Length: 306
Image (cartoon, rainbow, N blue to C red; front, side, top):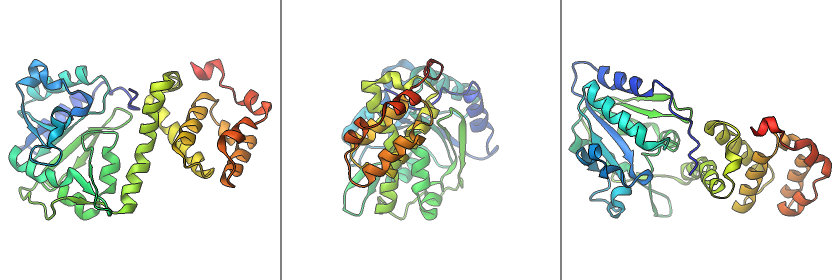
């Protein structure tokens, strides 16, 4: 599966270790690795992880049946050696999967688990409950942005810091309040339609990339994963301009954009295609009507394809 995340920067582990072990000296801190088990359901069968102290966040919730593929907190000792050991092992095991982040809590595990549970499901206006993928670092920035100021403050109340890797493979740190009051004033995260649809839109590029990886993985090899993701987002903006709403058409347009030379969608012939589809004409028909000059001038060169 294509994850659209660059390889980790060489100093990721050392930076995380230093940040976790040196932050808030003299204060009670409890470091945890937050792991999305959906990326590796056999992780806890390995010796190091099998003997780890871990907590299933989905236990005693409507998501408990997910078991190993759920969301986990792995407790760490705060010394550099332990943090480095677990992160080094996770680096080798994860193989680029965006499946982990580091939490430094001001409360112990049982209290932190109870504090996080109200955020594990999002309830939309139609009364449906949706699992929230806090462990997937591709999704995490969008989730944090979707929180209101009150919700974000409440979430970060009992956290001193939340370390995660962005798409470029760099460590980002979200500072928390580090307080010991962990009770949440709500039972479930209420998500209005505007924020829900914004999250769906934000995840569309990754969804399409996963589907492309199943059928044409060669289209995903000509640039870094993070830049490929940016290209897909740009293609989807063009799809919006052309009022292409059907999922097959949107995926087809993205695949075309990845197969052609950069900037091809700015060609006058393609801009005319978008005008036509915006007026109600079919995408496939308009694609077949593109002139030979478009295909000749927009073909990806050998250098661009390398």
